[in-house]
Length: 552
Image (cartoon, rainbow, N blue to C red; front, side):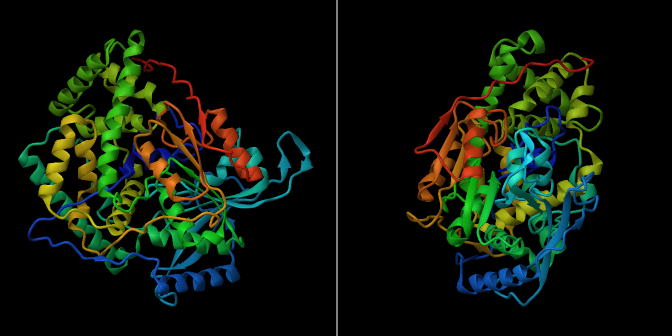
Protein backbone atom coordinates (compact mmCIF):
# COMPACT_ATOMS: atom_id res chain seq x y z
CA UNK A 1 0.00 0.00 0.00
CA UNK A 2 1.14 3.50 -0.66
CA UNK A 3 1.83 4.97 2.74
CA UNK A 4 1.42 8.56 1.73
CA UNK A 5 -2.20 8.89 0.83
CA UNK A 6 -3.37 6.92 3.82
CA UNK A 7 -1.09 8.80 6.15
CA UNK A 8 -2.36 12.21 5.13
CA UNK A 9 -5.95 11.23 5.84
CA UNK A 10 -4.93 9.59 9.09
CA UNK A 11 -3.14 12.72 10.27
CA UNK A 12 -6.21 14.87 9.74
CA UNK A 13 -8.07 12.99 12.49
CA UNK A 14 -9.57 10.95 12.86
CA UNK A 15 -7.53 8.65 11.19
CA UNK A 16 -8.63 6.44 8.46
CA UNK A 17 -12.36 6.17 9.03
CA UNK A 18 -12.88 6.97 12.66
CA UNK A 19 -14.59 10.13 11.51
CA UNK A 20 -15.62 11.35 8.10
CA UNK A 21 -12.56 12.24 6.06
CA UNK A 22 -12.24 15.98 5.39
CA UNK A 23 -13.56 17.01 2.02
CA UNK A 24 -10.69 19.14 0.81
CA UNK A 25 -7.50 18.11 2.56
CA UNK A 26 -4.11 18.29 0.96
CA UNK A 27 -2.53 14.92 0.18
CA UNK A 28 0.59 13.94 2.04
CA UNK A 29 2.37 10.66 1.27
CA UNK A 30 1.00 7.04 0.47
CA UNK A 31 0.51 3.20 2.00
CA UNK A 32 1.71 -0.45 0.58
CA UNK A 33 4.67 -3.01 -0.48
CA UNK A 34 7.88 -3.02 -2.86
CA UNK A 35 11.35 -4.32 -4.50
CA UNK A 36 14.08 -5.57 -7.28
CA UNK A 37 17.80 -6.06 -7.63
CA UNK A 38 20.47 -5.43 -10.21
CA UNK A 39 23.59 -7.60 -10.40
CA UNK A 40 25.65 -5.09 -8.41
CA UNK A 41 23.08 -4.93 -5.59
CA UNK A 42 22.70 -8.39 -4.01
CA UNK A 43 19.67 -8.90 -1.82
CA UNK A 44 20.12 -9.39 1.89
CA UNK A 45 19.22 -12.93 2.96
CA UNK A 46 15.89 -13.64 4.61
CA UNK A 47 16.03 -14.64 8.26
CA UNK A 48 13.71 -17.21 9.86
CA UNK A 49 10.27 -16.04 10.88
CA UNK A 50 9.61 -15.12 14.48
CA UNK A 51 8.24 -15.52 17.06
CA UNK A 52 11.55 -16.90 18.29
CA UNK A 53 12.09 -18.05 21.85
CA UNK A 54 14.54 -15.25 22.61
CA UNK A 55 12.12 -12.57 21.37
CA UNK A 56 9.23 -14.07 23.34
CA UNK A 57 11.31 -14.08 26.53
CA UNK A 58 12.43 -10.54 25.79
CA UNK A 59 8.83 -9.41 25.35
CA UNK A 60 7.86 -10.95 28.69
CA UNK A 61 10.79 -9.21 30.40
CA UNK A 62 9.95 -5.86 28.82
CA UNK A 63 6.25 -6.20 29.64
CA UNK A 64 6.98 -6.98 33.29
CA UNK A 65 9.19 -3.91 33.55
CA UNK A 66 6.59 -1.75 31.85
CA UNK A 67 3.84 -2.93 34.19
CA UNK A 68 6.00 -2.05 37.18
CA UNK A 69 6.94 1.35 35.78
CA UNK A 70 3.57 2.33 34.32
CA UNK A 71 3.32 5.51 32.26
CA UNK A 72 3.85 8.91 33.82
CA UNK A 73 1.23 10.93 31.96
CA UNK A 74 1.52 14.71 31.84
CA UNK A 75 0.71 17.61 29.51
CA UNK A 76 1.24 16.86 25.83
CA UNK A 77 3.84 18.78 23.86
CA UNK A 78 2.65 20.73 20.86
CA UNK A 79 4.83 18.52 18.65
CA UNK A 80 2.99 15.43 19.90
CA UNK A 81 -0.66 16.50 19.67
CA UNK A 82 -1.13 20.15 18.63
CA UNK A 83 -3.94 22.01 20.36
CA UNK A 84 -4.56 19.19 22.83
CA UNK A 85 -7.30 19.75 25.42
CA UNK A 86 -6.34 19.31 29.06
CA UNK A 87 -8.19 15.98 29.25
CA UNK A 88 -5.64 14.42 26.89
CA UNK A 89 -2.32 13.55 28.54
CA UNK A 90 0.91 12.20 27.10
CA UNK A 91 3.75 10.01 28.30
CA UNK A 92 6.30 7.48 27.14
CA UNK A 93 6.86 3.74 27.44
CA UNK A 94 10.26 2.10 27.11
CA UNK A 95 10.68 -0.91 24.78
CA UNK A 96 13.80 -2.82 23.66
CA UNK A 97 15.13 -1.97 20.23
CA UNK A 98 15.93 -5.71 19.89
CA UNK A 99 13.62 -8.03 21.82
CA UNK A 100 16.22 -10.78 21.69
CA UNK A 101 18.31 -8.47 23.93
CA UNK A 102 15.83 -6.92 26.37
CA UNK A 103 18.67 -5.51 28.52
CA UNK A 104 20.21 -3.75 25.53
CA UNK A 105 19.33 -0.44 23.91
CA UNK A 106 15.88 0.92 24.79
CA UNK A 107 13.72 3.28 22.75
CA UNK A 108 10.83 5.44 23.94
CA UNK A 109 7.37 5.31 22.38
CA UNK A 110 5.12 8.34 22.89
CA UNK A 111 1.60 7.63 24.15
CA UNK A 112 -1.53 9.77 24.50
CA UNK A 113 -4.58 9.07 26.64
CA UNK A 114 -7.97 10.50 27.56
CA UNK A 115 -9.46 8.87 30.63
CA UNK A 116 -12.89 7.29 30.42
CA UNK A 117 -15.44 9.96 31.32
CA UNK A 118 -17.79 7.37 32.92
CA UNK A 119 -20.64 9.76 32.08
CA UNK A 120 -23.71 8.57 30.23
CA UNK A 121 -23.95 10.87 27.17
CA UNK A 122 -27.75 10.74 27.48
CA UNK A 123 -27.83 11.34 31.25
CA UNK A 124 -24.81 13.20 32.64
CA UNK A 125 -25.82 12.35 36.23
CA UNK A 126 -25.55 8.60 35.54
CA UNK A 127 -22.13 7.03 36.04
CA UNK A 128 -21.06 4.20 33.71
CA UNK A 129 -18.52 1.54 34.74
CA UNK A 130 -15.09 1.81 33.11
CA UNK A 131 -14.03 -1.13 30.90
CA UNK A 132 -10.31 -0.39 30.57
CA UNK A 133 -8.18 1.05 27.78
CA UNK A 134 -8.98 1.03 24.05
CA UNK A 135 -5.72 1.26 22.07
CA UNK A 136 -5.86 2.40 18.44
CA UNK A 137 -3.45 2.24 15.51
CA UNK A 138 -4.37 3.97 12.22
CA UNK A 139 -2.11 2.00 9.89
CA UNK A 140 0.57 3.07 7.48
CA UNK A 141 3.11 1.75 8.36
CA UNK A 142 4.17 5.23 9.39
CA UNK A 143 0.98 6.82 10.70
CA UNK A 144 0.70 8.17 14.22
CA UNK A 145 -2.22 7.40 16.52
CA UNK A 146 -1.44 10.23 18.93
CA UNK A 147 -4.58 12.10 17.86
CA UNK A 148 -6.91 9.23 18.72
CA UNK A 149 -8.02 10.42 22.20
CA UNK A 150 -9.64 13.46 20.53
CA UNK A 151 -12.21 11.12 18.97
CA UNK A 152 -14.10 11.17 22.26
CA UNK A 153 -15.42 14.63 21.36
CA UNK A 154 -16.92 13.43 18.06
CA UNK A 155 -20.63 12.65 17.92
CA UNK A 156 -21.21 8.91 18.09
CA UNK A 157 -18.10 8.20 20.15
CA UNK A 158 -19.16 9.58 23.53
CA UNK A 159 -20.53 6.26 24.74
CA UNK A 160 -17.24 4.52 23.92
CA UNK A 161 -15.31 7.43 25.50
CA UNK A 162 -17.43 7.00 28.61
CA UNK A 163 -16.34 3.42 29.27
CA UNK A 164 -12.84 3.31 27.77
CA UNK A 165 -9.64 5.23 28.25
CA UNK A 166 -8.90 6.24 24.65
CA UNK A 167 -5.22 5.52 24.00
CA UNK A 168 -3.17 6.45 20.95
CA UNK A 169 0.53 6.13 20.36
CA UNK A 170 3.28 6.68 17.82
CA UNK A 171 4.76 3.31 16.80
CA UNK A 172 8.52 2.84 16.73
CA UNK A 173 10.09 5.08 14.15
CA UNK A 174 7.14 7.49 13.98
CA UNK A 175 7.15 11.07 15.23
CA UNK A 176 9.07 11.29 18.50
CA UNK A 177 9.22 7.48 18.93
CA UNK A 178 12.86 6.86 17.93
CA UNK A 179 12.17 8.50 14.56
CA UNK A 180 13.48 7.13 11.27
CA UNK A 181 14.65 9.18 8.31
CA UNK A 182 15.91 8.19 4.86
CA UNK A 183 16.59 11.55 3.22
CA UNK A 184 16.65 15.26 3.90
CA UNK A 185 13.01 16.35 4.41
CA UNK A 186 13.71 19.48 2.34
CA UNK A 187 14.20 17.24 -0.70
CA UNK A 188 11.33 14.87 0.03
CA UNK A 189 8.41 16.93 -1.27
CA UNK A 190 10.17 18.11 -4.42
CA UNK A 191 7.75 19.25 -7.09
CA UNK A 192 6.61 19.22 -9.80
CA UNK A 193 7.12 15.55 -10.70
CA UNK A 194 6.13 13.22 -13.50
CA UNK A 195 3.75 10.25 -13.32
CA UNK A 196 3.76 8.41 -16.67
CA UNK A 197 1.30 5.53 -16.90
CA UNK A 198 3.52 3.80 -19.48
CA UNK A 199 7.05 4.89 -18.54
CA UNK A 200 9.90 4.89 -21.02
CA UNK A 201 13.03 2.81 -20.51
CA UNK A 202 14.97 5.98 -19.68
CA UNK A 203 12.41 6.95 -17.03
CA UNK A 204 12.56 3.46 -15.54
CA UNK A 205 16.34 3.66 -15.25
CA UNK A 206 15.97 7.00 -13.50
CA UNK A 207 13.50 5.58 -10.97
CA UNK A 208 15.69 2.54 -10.33
CA UNK A 209 18.59 4.87 -9.53
CA UNK A 210 16.36 6.88 -7.18
CA UNK A 211 15.23 3.70 -5.39
CA UNK A 212 18.83 2.59 -4.92
CA UNK A 213 19.77 5.99 -3.53
CA UNK A 214 16.78 6.00 -1.18
CA UNK A 215 17.66 2.56 0.21
CA UNK A 216 21.25 3.71 0.77
CA UNK A 217 19.97 6.81 2.52
CA UNK A 218 17.88 4.73 4.91
CA UNK A 219 20.97 2.75 5.90
CA UNK A 220 23.19 5.80 6.21
CA UNK A 221 20.75 7.85 8.28
CA UNK A 222 19.46 5.02 10.50
CA UNK A 223 22.48 2.75 10.89
CA UNK A 224 22.32 -0.64 12.58
CA UNK A 225 18.91 0.02 14.14
CA UNK A 226 17.19 -0.07 10.74
CA UNK A 227 16.61 -3.84 10.82
CA UNK A 228 14.52 -3.66 14.01
CA UNK A 229 11.63 -1.71 12.50
CA UNK A 230 9.27 -4.58 11.66
CA UNK A 231 5.65 -5.60 12.03
CA UNK A 232 6.63 -8.33 14.48
CA UNK A 233 8.33 -5.76 16.71
CA UNK A 234 5.28 -3.51 16.37
CA UNK A 235 3.20 -6.39 17.74
CA UNK A 236 5.66 -6.92 20.60
CA UNK A 237 5.62 -3.19 21.37
CA UNK A 238 1.84 -3.42 21.59
CA UNK A 239 2.13 -6.06 24.33
CA UNK A 240 4.54 -3.90 26.30
CA UNK A 241 2.14 -0.96 25.95
CA UNK A 242 -0.70 -3.18 27.22
CA UNK A 243 1.32 -3.99 30.31
CA UNK A 244 2.37 -0.38 30.87
CA UNK A 245 -1.31 0.62 30.84
CA UNK A 246 -1.99 -1.97 33.57
CA UNK A 247 -4.20 -4.09 31.33
CA UNK A 248 -4.16 -7.89 31.69
CA UNK A 249 -5.85 -8.23 28.31
CA UNK A 250 -5.80 -5.79 25.41
CA UNK A 251 -8.75 -4.07 23.76
CA UNK A 252 -7.36 -3.00 20.40
CA UNK A 253 -8.64 -1.35 17.26
CA UNK A 254 -6.46 -1.33 14.16
CA UNK A 255 -7.18 0.17 10.76
CA UNK A 256 -5.55 -0.80 7.45
CA UNK A 257 -1.94 -1.84 8.16
CA UNK A 258 -2.92 -1.76 11.86
CA UNK A 259 -5.03 -4.84 11.15
CA UNK A 260 -1.96 -6.74 10.01
CA UNK A 261 0.15 -6.35 13.11
CA UNK A 262 -3.05 -6.62 15.17
CA UNK A 263 -3.47 -10.08 13.63
CA UNK A 264 0.18 -10.84 14.36
CA UNK A 265 -0.48 -9.83 17.96
CA UNK A 266 -3.51 -12.12 18.13
CA UNK A 267 -1.46 -15.04 16.81
CA UNK A 268 1.53 -14.37 19.09
CA UNK A 269 -0.31 -13.41 22.29
CA UNK A 270 -3.84 -14.87 22.03
CA UNK A 271 -4.38 -15.04 25.81
CA UNK A 272 -3.64 -11.31 26.05
CA UNK A 273 -6.58 -10.31 23.81
CA UNK A 274 -9.82 -9.00 25.32
CA UNK A 275 -11.50 -7.51 22.26
CA UNK A 276 -10.13 -6.65 18.84
CA UNK A 277 -11.57 -4.65 15.94
CA UNK A 278 -9.81 -4.96 12.57
CA UNK A 279 -11.09 -2.25 10.21
CA UNK A 280 -10.15 -2.39 6.50
CA UNK A 281 -8.35 -5.68 6.97
CA UNK A 282 -5.11 -6.41 5.14
CA UNK A 283 -4.63 -9.94 3.82
CA UNK A 284 -2.15 -11.60 6.25
CA UNK A 285 -1.31 -14.44 3.83
CA UNK A 286 2.50 -14.69 4.13
CA UNK A 287 2.77 -15.29 0.38
CA UNK A 288 1.33 -11.82 -0.22
CA UNK A 289 3.40 -9.82 2.27
CA UNK A 290 4.11 -7.40 0.67
CA UNK A 291 4.92 -7.60 -3.04
CA UNK A 292 1.80 -9.43 -4.22
CA UNK A 293 -0.39 -7.34 -1.92
CA UNK A 294 0.72 -4.20 -3.73
CA UNK A 295 -0.03 -5.65 -7.15
CA UNK A 296 -3.53 -6.59 -5.97
CA UNK A 297 -3.95 -3.13 -4.51
CA UNK A 298 -3.02 -1.46 -7.79
CA UNK A 299 -5.58 -3.59 -9.62
CA UNK A 300 -8.25 -2.64 -7.06
CA UNK A 301 -7.52 1.07 -7.43
CA UNK A 302 -8.44 0.80 -11.10
CA UNK A 303 -11.94 -0.25 -10.06
CA UNK A 304 -12.20 2.62 -7.57
CA UNK A 305 -11.00 5.08 -10.20
CA UNK A 306 -13.81 3.76 -12.40
CA UNK A 307 -16.30 4.34 -9.55
CA UNK A 308 -15.09 7.91 -9.17
CA UNK A 309 -15.27 8.65 -12.91
CA UNK A 310 -18.78 7.24 -13.04
CA UNK A 311 -19.83 9.52 -10.16
CA UNK A 312 -18.32 12.57 -11.88
CA UNK A 313 -20.13 11.69 -15.10
CA UNK A 314 -23.45 11.49 -13.25
CA UNK A 315 -22.83 15.06 -12.07
CA UNK A 316 -21.87 16.56 -15.42
CA UNK A 317 -24.29 19.42 -14.72
CA UNK A 318 -21.99 20.48 -11.86
CA UNK A 319 -18.51 19.63 -13.11
CA UNK A 320 -18.82 19.85 -16.93
CA UNK A 321 -16.28 17.05 -17.35
CA UNK A 322 -18.41 14.82 -19.55
CA UNK A 323 -21.49 12.68 -19.15
CA UNK A 324 -19.63 9.38 -19.53
CA UNK A 325 -16.67 7.88 -17.60
CA UNK A 326 -14.70 7.80 -20.86
CA UNK A 327 -15.04 11.56 -21.35
CA UNK A 328 -14.04 12.14 -17.72
CA UNK A 329 -10.93 10.04 -18.35
CA UNK A 330 -10.09 12.14 -21.40
CA UNK A 331 -10.39 15.28 -19.30
CA UNK A 332 -8.06 13.85 -16.67
CA UNK A 333 -5.57 12.82 -19.38
CA UNK A 334 -5.74 16.30 -20.86
CA UNK A 335 -4.98 17.85 -17.47
CA UNK A 336 -2.03 15.52 -16.98
CA UNK A 337 -0.60 16.43 -20.40
CA UNK A 338 -0.99 20.16 -19.78
CA UNK A 339 0.64 19.90 -16.36
CA UNK A 340 3.55 18.00 -17.90
CA UNK A 341 4.15 20.99 -20.18
CA UNK A 342 3.60 23.65 -17.51
CA UNK A 343 3.13 22.99 -13.81
CA UNK A 344 0.20 24.76 -12.16
CA UNK A 345 1.48 27.33 -9.70
CA UNK A 346 4.98 26.11 -10.50
CA UNK A 347 4.47 23.12 -8.14
CA UNK A 348 1.63 20.93 -9.42
CA UNK A 349 2.70 18.54 -12.15
CA UNK A 350 1.36 15.12 -13.16
CA UNK A 351 2.76 13.53 -9.98
CA UNK A 352 0.92 15.94 -7.71
CA UNK A 353 -2.28 15.51 -9.73
CA UNK A 354 -1.95 11.73 -9.37
CA UNK A 355 -1.38 11.93 -5.63
CA UNK A 356 -4.40 14.18 -5.13
CA UNK A 357 -6.64 11.85 -7.10
CA UNK A 358 -5.22 8.76 -5.43
CA UNK A 359 -6.68 9.98 -2.14
CA UNK A 360 -10.11 9.93 -3.79
CA UNK A 361 -9.59 6.18 -4.16
CA UNK A 362 -9.33 5.96 -0.38
CA UNK A 363 -12.23 8.19 0.63
CA UNK A 364 -15.48 9.10 -1.13
CA UNK A 365 -15.56 12.33 0.86
CA UNK A 366 -12.68 13.57 -1.28
CA UNK A 367 -14.62 13.13 -4.53
CA UNK A 368 -16.31 16.58 -4.66
CA UNK A 369 -13.12 18.58 -4.02
CA UNK A 370 -11.06 16.61 -6.55
CA UNK A 371 -13.71 16.77 -9.25
CA UNK A 372 -14.22 20.49 -8.67
CA UNK A 373 -10.47 21.19 -8.85
CA UNK A 374 -10.11 19.23 -12.08
CA UNK A 375 -13.09 21.01 -13.59
CA UNK A 376 -11.79 24.44 -12.61
CA UNK A 377 -8.34 23.70 -14.02
CA UNK A 378 -9.67 22.51 -17.36
CA UNK A 379 -11.91 25.57 -17.56
CA UNK A 380 -9.11 28.04 -16.95
CA UNK A 381 -8.80 28.39 -13.18
CA UNK A 382 -5.79 26.49 -11.73
CA UNK A 383 -6.10 27.86 -8.18
CA UNK A 384 -8.36 25.13 -6.69
CA UNK A 385 -5.98 22.46 -7.98
CA UNK A 386 -2.94 24.31 -6.66
CA UNK A 387 -4.55 24.69 -3.23
CA UNK A 388 -5.43 21.01 -3.22
CA UNK A 389 -2.32 19.37 -4.66
CA UNK A 390 0.73 21.59 -4.11
CA UNK A 391 3.13 20.21 -1.47
CA UNK A 392 3.23 22.07 1.82
CA UNK A 393 6.77 22.64 3.08
CA UNK A 394 5.58 22.70 6.69
CA UNK A 395 4.55 19.04 6.41
CA UNK A 396 7.80 17.84 4.80
CA UNK A 397 9.47 16.47 7.94
CA UNK A 398 6.37 14.54 9.02
CA UNK A 399 5.81 13.22 5.50
CA UNK A 400 9.44 12.11 5.08
CA UNK A 401 9.34 10.34 8.44
CA UNK A 402 6.13 8.51 7.50
CA UNK A 403 7.64 7.39 4.22
CA UNK A 404 10.84 6.17 5.92
CA UNK A 405 8.90 4.07 8.44
CA UNK A 406 6.63 2.68 5.76
CA UNK A 407 9.58 1.64 3.64
CA UNK A 408 11.63 0.19 6.49
CA UNK A 409 8.82 -1.92 7.93
CA UNK A 410 7.64 -3.35 4.65
CA UNK A 411 11.14 -3.97 3.30
CA UNK A 412 12.18 -5.68 6.54
CA UNK A 413 9.02 -7.75 6.85
CA UNK A 414 9.43 -10.13 3.94
CA UNK A 415 11.56 -11.26 0.98
CA UNK A 416 11.05 -9.20 -2.16
CA UNK A 417 11.76 -9.91 -5.82
CA UNK A 418 15.37 -8.93 -6.37
CA UNK A 419 15.45 -8.89 -10.16
CA UNK A 420 14.37 -5.66 -11.83
CA UNK A 421 13.14 -7.79 -14.72
CA UNK A 422 10.49 -9.28 -12.39
CA UNK A 423 9.22 -5.86 -11.36
CA UNK A 424 9.28 -4.61 -14.92
CA UNK A 425 7.41 -7.63 -16.22
CA UNK A 426 4.73 -7.70 -13.51
CA UNK A 427 3.99 -3.99 -13.52
CA UNK A 428 4.08 -3.65 -17.30
CA UNK A 429 1.49 -6.42 -17.60
CA UNK A 430 -0.70 -4.94 -14.87
CA UNK A 431 -0.46 -1.39 -16.24
CA UNK A 432 -2.06 -2.55 -19.49
CA UNK A 433 -5.34 -3.17 -17.64
CA UNK A 434 -4.86 -1.04 -14.50
CA UNK A 435 -2.83 2.04 -15.49
CA UNK A 436 -4.15 4.48 -12.88
CA UNK A 437 -1.95 3.49 -9.93
CA UNK A 438 0.28 0.61 -10.99
CA UNK A 439 3.59 2.33 -11.72
CA UNK A 440 3.33 4.93 -8.95
CA UNK A 441 2.78 2.10 -6.47
CA UNK A 442 5.78 0.26 -7.88
CA UNK A 443 8.07 3.29 -7.56
CA UNK A 444 6.96 3.81 -3.96
CA UNK A 445 8.01 0.30 -3.04
CA UNK A 446 11.03 -0.15 -5.28
CA UNK A 447 13.66 0.63 -2.56
CA UNK A 448 12.90 -2.80 -1.10
CA UNK A 449 14.65 -4.33 -4.11
CA UNK A 450 17.92 -2.85 -2.90
CA UNK A 451 17.31 -3.05 0.82
CA UNK A 452 20.49 -3.31 2.93
CA UNK A 453 18.95 -4.99 6.01
CA UNK A 454 18.00 -8.67 6.42
CA UNK A 455 14.45 -9.63 5.39
CA UNK A 456 12.25 -11.74 7.61
CA UNK A 457 9.86 -14.47 6.58
CA UNK A 458 6.31 -13.45 7.51
CA UNK A 459 4.49 -15.26 10.27
CA UNK A 460 1.67 -17.51 9.06
CA UNK A 461 -1.22 -15.94 10.98
CA UNK A 462 -3.63 -18.63 12.20
CA UNK A 463 -5.54 -19.20 15.43
CA UNK A 464 -7.52 -22.28 16.38
CA UNK A 465 -11.07 -22.50 17.79
CA UNK A 466 -11.27 -21.08 21.30
CA UNK A 467 -7.78 -19.56 21.31
CA UNK A 468 -9.11 -16.01 20.89
CA UNK A 469 -12.21 -14.13 21.95
CA UNK A 470 -14.38 -13.29 18.92
CA UNK A 471 -12.67 -10.67 16.71
CA UNK A 472 -14.77 -8.13 14.78
CA UNK A 473 -13.58 -7.54 11.19
CA UNK A 474 -14.98 -4.57 9.24
CA UNK A 475 -14.61 -4.18 5.48
CA UNK A 476 -15.97 -2.21 2.55
CA UNK A 477 -16.63 -4.38 -0.46
CA UNK A 478 -14.86 -2.07 -2.94
CA UNK A 479 -12.01 -0.87 -0.73
CA UNK A 480 -8.97 -0.46 -3.00
CA UNK A 481 -6.28 0.15 -0.37
CA UNK A 482 -7.26 -3.06 1.44
CA UNK A 483 -9.02 -5.22 -1.18
CA UNK A 484 -11.99 -7.17 0.13
CA UNK A 485 -10.42 -10.59 -0.36
CA UNK A 486 -8.03 -9.61 2.43
CA UNK A 487 -10.91 -9.37 4.90
CA UNK A 488 -12.12 -12.79 3.80
CA UNK A 489 -8.63 -14.21 4.29
CA UNK A 490 -8.32 -12.59 7.72
CA UNK A 491 -11.68 -14.03 8.71
CA UNK A 492 -10.63 -17.56 7.68
CA UNK A 493 -7.36 -17.32 9.59
CA UNK A 494 -8.74 -16.01 12.91
CA UNK A 495 -11.02 -18.75 14.18
CA UNK A 496 -14.26 -17.39 15.62
CA UNK A 497 -13.92 -13.97 14.00
CA UNK A 498 -16.97 -12.33 12.45
CA UNK A 499 -17.01 -10.13 9.33
CA UNK A 500 -19.23 -7.08 8.86
CA UNK A 501 -19.33 -5.92 5.22
CA UNK A 502 -20.43 -2.56 3.85
CA UNK A 503 -21.76 -3.58 0.43
CA UNK A 504 -20.97 -1.68 -2.78
CA UNK A 505 -18.84 0.85 -0.86
CA UNK A 506 -15.15 1.64 -1.11
CA UNK A 507 -14.13 4.02 1.65
CA UNK A 508 -10.97 2.77 3.35
CA UNK A 509 -11.95 2.24 6.96
CA UNK A 510 -15.62 2.24 7.93
CA UNK A 511 -15.69 2.32 11.74
CA UNK A 512 -17.32 5.45 13.12
CA UNK A 513 -18.30 6.78 9.69
CA UNK A 514 -21.81 7.63 8.49
CA UNK A 515 -23.12 4.03 8.26
CA UNK A 516 -25.42 3.41 11.23
CA UNK A 517 -25.52 -0.33 10.55
CA UNK A 518 -21.72 -0.63 10.76
CA UNK A 519 -21.58 1.55 13.86
CA UNK A 520 -24.29 -0.48 15.55
CA UNK A 521 -22.17 -3.62 15.26
CA UNK A 522 -19.07 -1.72 16.39
CA UNK A 523 -20.74 -0.30 19.48
CA UNK A 524 -22.41 -3.57 20.47
CA UNK A 525 -19.05 -5.30 20.29
CA UNK A 526 -16.96 -2.72 22.12
CA UNK A 527 -19.57 -1.97 24.77
CA UNK A 528 -21.06 -5.43 25.30
CA UNK A 529 -18.59 -7.86 23.77
CA UNK A 530 -21.21 -9.32 21.42
CA UNK A 531 -20.66 -10.04 17.72
CA UNK A 532 -23.31 -10.93 15.14
CA UNK A 533 -24.35 -14.59 15.15
CA UNK A 534 -23.06 -14.83 11.58
CA UNK A 535 -21.39 -12.56 9.08
CA UNK A 536 -23.35 -9.33 8.71
CA UNK A 537 -24.02 -7.17 5.66
CA UNK A 538 -24.77 -3.45 5.71
CA UNK A 539 -26.21 -1.35 2.89
CA UNK A 540 -23.78 1.22 1.47
CA UNK A 541 -23.54 4.78 2.71
CA UNK A 542 -24.96 7.55 0.58
CA UNK A 543 -22.64 8.84 -2.13
CA UNK A 544 -21.25 12.34 -1.54
CA UNK A 545 -23.13 15.36 -2.81
CA UNK A 546 -21.62 17.18 -5.79
CA UNK A 547 -20.15 20.61 -5.01
CA UNK A 548 -18.50 23.04 -7.45
CA UNK A 549 -15.15 24.63 -6.60
CA UNK A 550 -15.40 27.91 -4.72
CA UNK A 551 -14.63 30.75 -7.04
CA UNK A 552 -14.50 28.50 -10.09
